[in-house]
Image 1 (cartoon, rainbow, N blue to C red):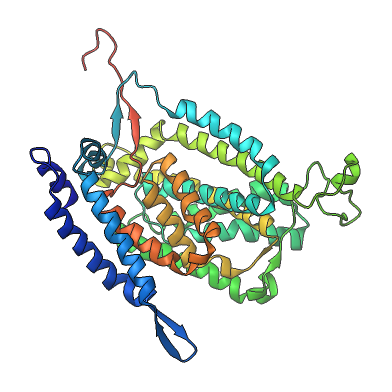
Image 2: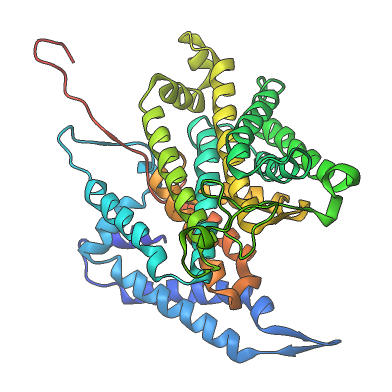
Length: 433
């Protein structure tokens, strides 16, 4: 019996300890079957060593957590929590017209924290948060394509690569810097998204996923094999950003002036990452605002109509061609921006950074955060990118963690962790509802 049924049964009875113990034993058995071969067997040279203690701790932790959870959901607070995890209520949540969102107070506080964060953070924390913000951009872009328009794109990493290599190639062959390439990369990625959109206009579901997956692999193979132009597997260097033409290095290149010499302060190697963080943070805020406005404009409603029922969308007179192209174009341009920041943050790009796993990771961010939910995507981006960096000792279980989370979300929250919320409207006086 599921947790929800246990909770409903407990409304009339007390704690059902017997059923909780049964559920606990089942959970322990499943944990032993799934994690036992992975955690309990360790390769040592040419032999295998059994680690039963590790398995016992893991299975015991799962059983204890399952037992406590089973008891908790039989309380009033647990039943209220389960109502939010009901898959049937995972669609758009319409709030009262006079509802005041808590985000009105949370967002300014988070912005203040983000502004003062570089003052207290070291280089490692800065780089980790920069990586998280890059994946926030990627998640927001793919959320337009998958979450709002309902177009399954498995080759989204191709637009990410276009932005990153746009900076490296522009610097290598044209002498372009970070600020010159930033808008050009967004435009180039948008054009690539528009070009990809045309052949997939008549495709849906699995066919669309296969075509986009092929597009992503084609871009990666071209970058990997065109040795004379892209450097192939050896990659290419990418330039650092500048501030009013001033460089952040200890010694300026090409006769430039380092920023610390111009302003007369001591050289700080972290200053480059502080600047990247500040610019990236402002770009993320701008993209969040633009996406927020677009979802409330006719084009945003058209994306949602296309996602729910394309035939009904066309029967209402909506141009499904332009709707799809707009989604692909805007989503791709956001990935292009993220690619430029990734290249200047790394200082180097090569094809191994743009594999299918990156597309799967970005898709996992959208699915786990919530299809169409902006707040959920931001949270999921930081959880799935920053957490593995902070917990490197568990990095070998990263893919397993993604798989478990995806399965659990598809069972209990098909629309993601945070549902799309929309404020209701009140008809004007004298107007029929």
